[in-house]
Image (cartoon, rainbow, N blue to C red; front, side, top):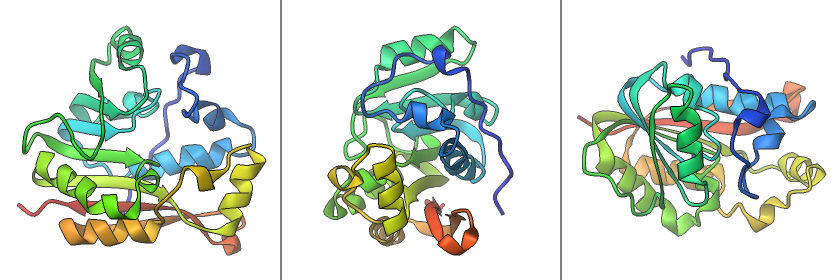
Length: 217
């Protein structure tokens, strides 16, 4: 079972000015904010702690205040984030991080380095044919018995409509469905569980899916 986790958001002005693609403002929105925070909390609840965690797609560093309570060392890999500014922000708070820019398809880390690889709303941006390669890279950098925790939106009409209300056309950014991601993960790693987050009311169906997979020891 997932542990109950509350996302420890800082005041929005505490974060560096986000890149255009960073959804930072959505976490503070009066209507959609609870859903955005809930997705992150569901992922964090699957993280088991350890020495080192790598977050792929760390953005503004929203998870770092939580991760520092579970891991000794926080690493981050992101295509677009300003690694220097984000790292400086958290260093000043006493939360040291090791951040860089790069792709999950070719990660600049040695084999067997991490206890956890965390990806929140990242893998849907890869094309289906890239998914297996991404998970192979994650397996490479994981310690034996290490875990991958990922979260991806569930492909549904309601989700598309909700994003349009936010002025965001997901069809221009989301290329893989939750089924594409899970299928690739199961080819490379051992499944612990896949859990879903439901909309309100629950009868509207699942809106987000979290996968928990491990590298066989």
